Length: 325
Length: 304
Image (cartoon, rainbow over all chains, first blue to last red; front, side, top):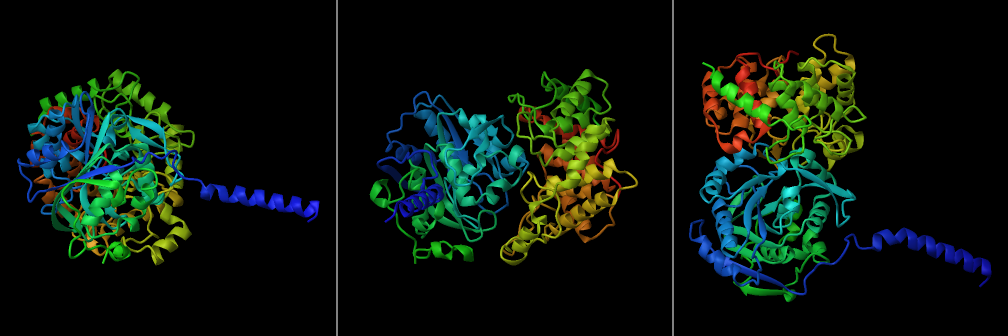
């Protein structure tokens, strides 16, 4: 080997490394995955005032230190179509608010920025949220119209670099994602992580928040969830949705509320309950590298059992591969 | 019968919510001025001689981006908001046909939905066909670099129609025609409009009151067709059961523009009140504009 060939080889190697490095480097700033995660599945057959007791028993299985904390409950409120369970049920949200108050939280609010219906007050009124929140004296913040702060994203799957996010979300100690368990025609599923699209403000990004679609829905979920931590999940799977979700699917009773201290574990569990393989859902499998645990080996099942349904949830044709069978 | 006392009450509440440096935020607990409540408030106060209006017109002019657009809120990036058209409408109706308004109009004329590019049009025509729409018929996006949607398209059409009452240049005419085609293409099968997805995976989606009303206002003066007629019918039916002031106010503005009776809806709008409502400047302003359409004229009524 001559010195010339050695030099040429070294330059080639350096150039190759420089080109490949961006693809090999992780797209997140740090690993925040816990060593183990807890999940509890509560059986519930209907929405009623009795949910609070069941929820409280399940929350006590987690070692939550709520004393003095400000809690933000983030339900999934998209639109209202009579007879179709599109939104997280208001009775479950009210029950969660009361539970966190009893656990010692300094304050509890409900906050959401509907991604489709611009008239937030209309959807709150028609979905029953307005009455329930007023009855329980729970404040509501419209995240579409809150004060906005420019925030550098803690992951770079989209290349967006930063997003404007609502000050209310950033200033709360404990964010609880409360999704409705649904299939989704663009992302496969919409669970606790996809639910966080609701913190991205319509004032800046519109109705729908189309920039998140153009940047890649799976990628946007990862960037948003890396930047706005979800501290706890209470997923409404009492009546879920299958097929052409999130707006035009079919109601499907799942009789379950899924609780977890880890959004990735929660979403992996919900996916299994829907009859899907979580590792086939890109944002769950990628989030399992740095945000939380999707593997059952790393999840402590605190209550209930994960039982796949005999017939997996229906999906649009593009997501047939998610079904476990 | 218009409840003038109620109108005065709403107007006073709106003036009270003006931010100290001019402009309005959405809610009284938010101190960051936003484009939509500022523009709607200026429209609601357009006949007002108070310092509030003068100060906030100045504020709006100062908020303009170097490229002629307006940001969505104070502190936003400078690429431009899909509600830039509202700033143009507010300035025109406040007698500010100045260079800055013209620059806003220019920005509107050169801004379009991303699907207007041949590459994306090809994608939406061949591989990405789950949402039923014709990408050749494009309007305006919420943000540059994204697709056209109903609300920014409708406001942009209203702004261009108001900016060029007569003698529209060809390029303006073309944009208005494209916008009109896009709105008609995106209508929901049963009448009305939502954000812009009428049919997804073969399933018709539900229309929304405010999107339907804004689209109908933008199509004002156009030759009546099936989409306009069914949109009006749907709006008239749906507004009867609407208890949310924002949607009800927009419904009144659209129905009035087409000569449909609105007295009953106005009477109901005047009875709607709660503390939460009075905290939202954009809703307050929309209510005043709706009440005023029988008193001072409909600010969004346009001719072809």
